[in-house]
Length: 67
Image 1 (cartoon, rainbow, N blue to C red):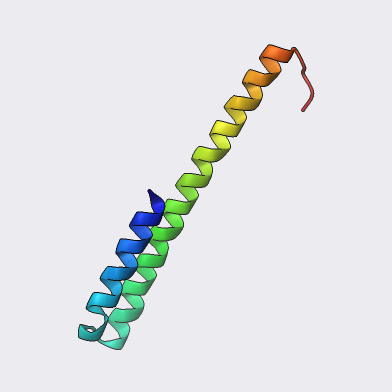
Image 2 (image 1 turned 90 degrees about the horizontal axis):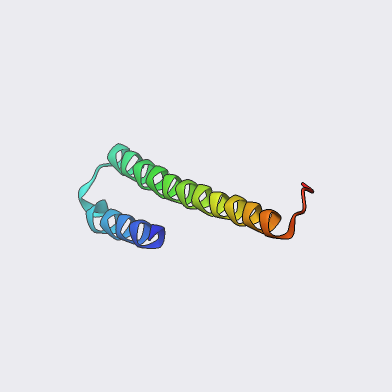
């Protein structure tokens, strides 16, 4: 899902790039990068939560309490 957002953001940037002045290009590029970074952070948080939940389930089934 994050890959599509990044791809559409970059395509949009490339589409509008010729019509923008230099300062606006930097601002738009910064917005695209920030959006991509947020998408990656949300994805990483979701994966981390899934790993924690899975580890908790394995510990519950196996009866281990090691960290």
